[in-house]
Image 1 (cartoon, rainbow, N blue to C red):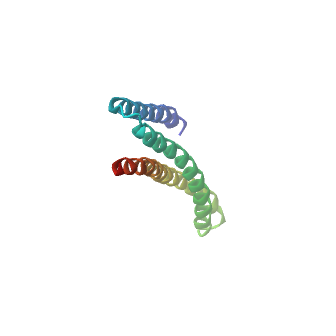
Image 2 (tube, one colour):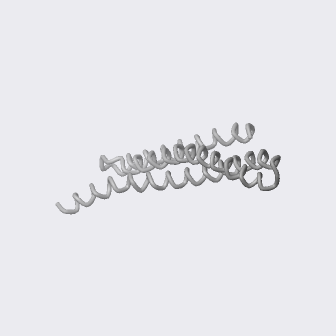
Image 3 (spheres, rainbow, N blue to C red):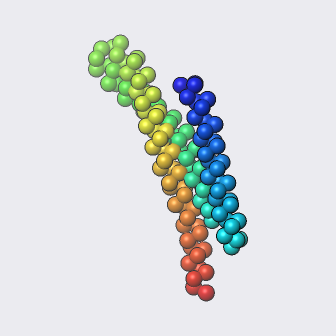
Length: 124
C-alpha cells in the first residue's frame, strides 16, 4: 500500500492543481470579474479530499466492525481476519464514496451561490 501511496498521492495533487489552474485560466479569460469556475473547482477539490478522508475513516471503522462480526460467525479466530479485511474494504468504499459525493455536493453548493447572482443580473 505504501508503494501505491507514493505514486497515487503526487498524481492526485498534480491533477487537482491542473484542474484549479485551468479554472483560474477560464475565469481570467472570461474577464467578467467573477471567479465562478475557480470557486466551483476549489469547492470540488476540497470536497473530494475532505470527503475522501472522512469517508475512508468512517468506512474503515464500520468495515472493521462488520468484518469482525461476520468473521465471528466462522469461529472466534475468524473475527481477527474478518475485521482486518472489513476495515480495508470499508475504507476503500467509504473513501471513494465520501470523496465523490462531497466533491459533487460542494461543487453544486458553490454553483448555487453564482446562480442567484446571475438571476439578480437578469432582473435588471
